[in-house]
Length: 151
Image (cartoon, rainbow, N blue to C red; front, side, top):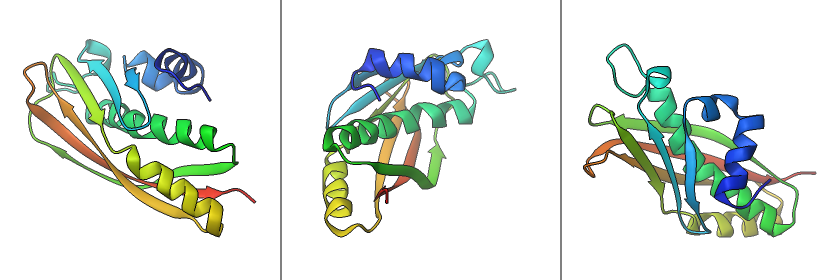
């Protein structure tokens, strides 16, 4: 798996085509933070002429999942990752360019360390917040990631 934004975006073209075709793009990533943008367009809208909730979910999940993938790769271990649970809150109609940010990458390293040391699965909850061009929160997503060393 790739480690920088352009390589992850290319990965999405081949492995996550729904992400690519709906316009979801990773803009920034490091060990602590990831930023994804998506612009409301005809292809990703709902009947109410705003960004479809599932597209918002893909963008939000990418902010968390890309950091998890990168830190697993850096660990050098064969670790599985899976979303076990999620929830979301929609607080404003999502139109225009929406930017999702997750700043909870610090949670990942400890979970990876614990699963390597114990062999037991670990879970972490990570939050991604979507804001519009005016800086107003349009949605908040929480993802429960499970991590486990593969046998």
